[in-house]
Image (cartoon, rainbow, N blue to C red; front, side, top):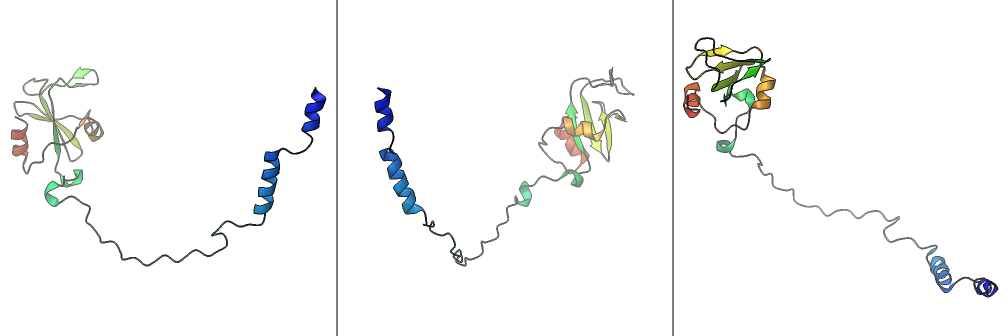
Length: 147
């Protein structure tokens, strides 16, 4: 039985024969576009320059254009294991944290300000969320934040 199968398989199959014929036909052909210099692109009109910036009334000033930034902090502020408290009135919550000229200042509800040396601008930038408004004066900002 195996002898008969081997005897039939001695010659190439029909698929192998067709592949060999196709290979022989394509042997010396070159795909179109190979060896031909590329066509020169047609000259086009330059695209119109469009200003992709926001209009001035919608632009937000960058941090170097501001005198400072303020963020409310309603919960107690714990620094190095101790709670920050106002040196004058003893308040320990409902702070405004000001970042200006590389300093961090804490302002209590009563209006007392003190520099906090344990905080830096990097800490402030990590905590600061998106700004919801910009103000021309410090007093306008205080009114906006309810102080």
